[in-house]
Image 1: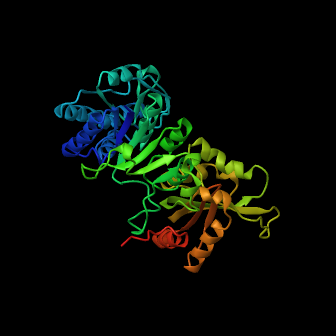
Image 2: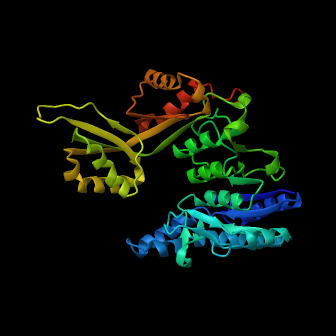
Image 3: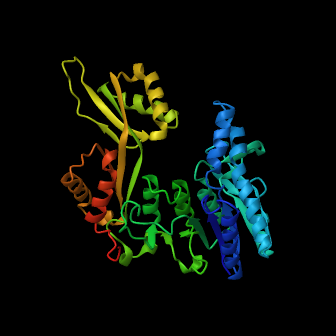
Length: 423
């Protein structure tokens, strides 16, 4: 008997018919002799609808009440799935985040899970019940409902799997695994059988939408065995233990036979480039730029500082370029505008027509030439590089948005990732 967590995303829960299909899949796992806890997202589009209600009520809404509203979507799907499971002959009950409880920080709309009390939950599983748990939500001090941020149901599922010492955590979504790149751009993209935690963390952080970044980091920390599977498959498809999707593993578990130089190519159009011109070239100048952004909780990615130039001035100055998430551009401009006197820049220029292209692979650790292949390939197709950032297993470049799909296709081919048997 295995103890498993099954997580179903919004598209998998989009309406009562889809929920019945999920119930049938859960029943197959129970009939295979497994103890099952299910973590569910709200129906596709429901969270956006609830967020809009909050914005319509007040542009300056209380984040504590915001969490009460937006957490309702997962509560609804939890109850509906429990009903559907009972209808197919299973013992099932829903558990709200406060009933377990799932204890979190007080950071409303972006809370972090502290601990989960699984005593009652495990007792329920031992009695043969299926536990249905709303993802995305928990409870903070004062017994206030909290939410974990967009995509937080993935994190809920991994955290539940770690807390209840599950044998595996199956993430069911609208894709059947992790691919070498977006198949909509490159039809010859290959589905990967195994990906390391480190690679999946990098892919998630640079644009791959399969798993939320926080969930991957938590899985790596807690050594949770995670699989990405599709809920949009034939009912006769193998169960999760047959590994029909992509398994997220440690680098040690990957093995040299399966290790590739490059695992995947990711792209992200949700980037904005900001340039501050004629920043005084002196100690503390860069800190004056990024400290107020950090205080505003704005993440900065690529950073370029040009060589100092005089331009007829008495004191040297430099231009500083960096990227922020596109959704944070307006706040970034506001923060930097207010700090102009302290920073001392002359002009602020921004551009949203950019995209980040990244190549990721643990094989980079032991092979040279990955970056040069990327730069040469893009240069041969006339694609200009605006910024570069690297890590031990990733190289990312910023390019003009119009070249996104071309860049992904040519890099996918250049690194030998095209599937040989693709149509």
